[in-house]
Length: 249
Image (tube, rainbow, N blue to C red; front, side, top):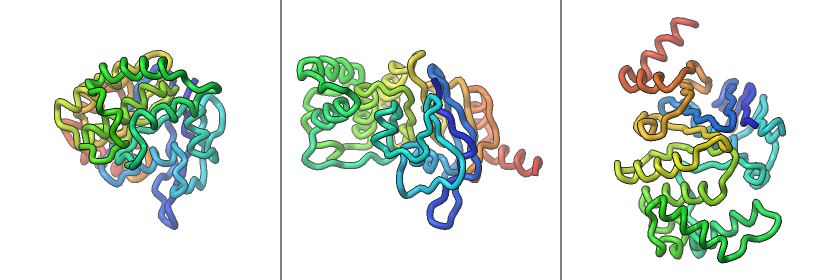
């Protein structure tokens, strides 16, 4: 099973942002997509989840061979795709627990029993070092950056998708919160799930080691490699990649 992006071109209005992206993530693999601000990383994340503000002008998004390019966001989620947002939405009046139960039920034919839901939720909250009172609060209302990211990873754990896209999950986290969130992601890794971690920093990759690293510049993936590529970026920055691309042009 795979999440496959084929020759993807995306624009907002008249501005083309993605200019032919090819990427394939197999189950059991963890990929990192890196690039400076403005390179198109978050555009790719939003497009994968069907944000209507982003227009696909060419190419396809396939999940296990099924074409999801025109699918609605809820259809993509039910198909097994998950996105942890860079800036999660606040939903006043809806508690974390109620939101999670609704999300879980949306992927099931029969609603989950309250006792079963509570047991699963408690297990994942313990892993993420989240206090029980947290689930009574309204989703993301008054949350710190770290709390928002923990809520996203808790949602990931509860939904157990086939493929998870994490858009700048490390953004705004202090070192303790980063370690806890990374532990949660690592606990979810395995043969049954693929990950695409989108970031412009290497720090989360010190805790969540990818097998594959892709570098994006100006809406294209311009270089690919193993985890050592992230170490090279840490040492040299993105300028050396720009120089390589310019030399090939």
